[in-house]
Picture 1 (cartoon, one colour):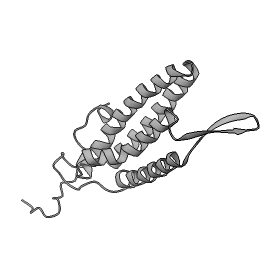
Picture 2 (picture 1 turned 135 degrees about the vertical axis):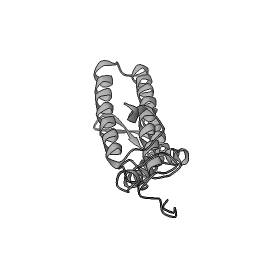
Picture 3 (picture 1 turned 120 degrees about the vertical axis):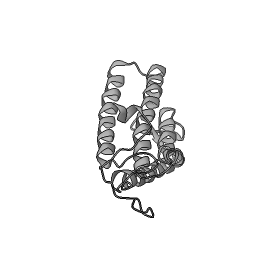
Picture 4 (picture 1 turned 90 degrees about the vertical axis):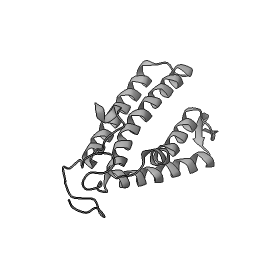
Length: 162
């Protein structure tokens, strides 16, 4: 459970992917539950906000630990990785940047140019995040955030062996 609740230490790529898959499962279950149980309108929107804040907290804990394994400072990178997705979520929930289109007598809300641009930015940053955190190796040996997640005792580049 520390994977989702604590912000200190390091996790390996395996821990990152397990955290991601666990979060996806939780999001699917929560989304299905909200849609099937709650009435629409303001009640559903408030539930989405509460669940979204919880998801952001949990995902931030996973990201911070993985960034620590890559020996990167967490704060700027978490903001860079999460901000476009959070902005897109807000735009989707409140239909900011959407316009109504009528097709065969049925009205649909479709994203406008600004929402589409935020969506593409969010996807590009998300892809970068997954490459950076899901595929690139962590720092070998101990770093300023803790011991190597893979148990390697190799000294960091530029450090003399004792």
